[in-house]
Image: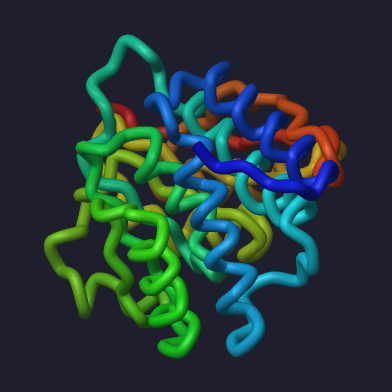
Length: 231
């Protein structure tokens, strides 16, 4: 079990553990994510993976904020088989998907090869073995991995761009019954929501109800915006 002598980090770790329990993560999932975040902080001394400077901040902003991805998937459905994290950056929320569903193959897409290699080292340090890195622009993913065309049950998008362009970019990967999950602030601009809905419909996707959540710490009130490809 992960422990720390920093009271702020311990409080953040407690929030992370509570979130993983709430969202049905396997036992010990919070400790895996905390190890991953610690590795991200260490790598950030050489590669810019995060703006967080402390373990407490990184746990809240990177990990606890990612855990509600579990609420984007119906609990009575079989786990997603393949997931894609668009513009993974520091590896989250993709790593959280991998920890929540150990049988799922998670493809982390990062166009900067140096960042991709750093995230790969973080995954190894945390013991996450069901995630793979593809170093390419998301628009080139199917050229590198044609098997992913209509092959992803879950596509996660956080801190990449607005709803419309990122939904359009992700849509060729989404399998029937699959979902695109966007992390957005609680106060989502109406213009962005409308543009996202138009793009989703053009791609053959339908909107699902948002999932509202609070990650605690610095993240505050947030929402997941969901689109699904009908079966």
